[in-house]
Length: 216
Image (cartoon, rainbow, N blue to C red):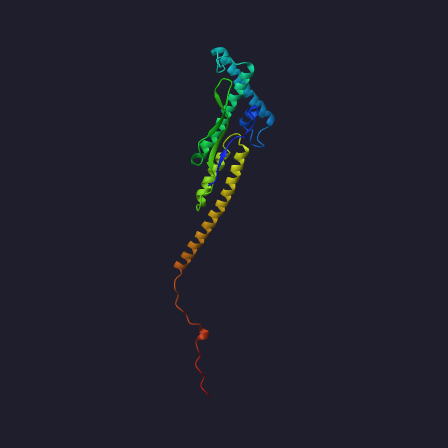
């Protein structure tokens, strides 16, 4: 059966925040300017929270224990935002895909604090049709389509999987309709023959010979 993966678009490390952020992969949803502002604000909040954490607790720090500088704090804030977005994206695929989706796997980047943060991820999914069972295929494809489009920011690969599943869905619906039609016709033929009653043969008047006339 075909198996594919859901994953955000791969990008260079400097642009990974945009790749994993909501509504970045789906064309025609929202306005890019508003999305950029939303993502920038989220990253700023994470950076500010990191700075406040540094002041309050003396952390985060580099692996050697020295405090992070402002540039490292900004980068750390971006990594935290990316990590959160990537995990939400893949978990949406997992939850909705149910038995057809596998477990998420992630690619990580080590932050300036020495911790690992998810910057990309993928979820394997079985989207092949069920052989010989169009009704089961219909149910499966409906689940696959919902899983592919579950995140707020479906990637290009997600949209491709949804499109392929729709093709399988339409084919299965057509096959199912044809099977039902054949079964209905078969039942109709059986009912008609069983309801018919044998009738007695009535001779046609044209077949009855008239008596011969007497000669004068």
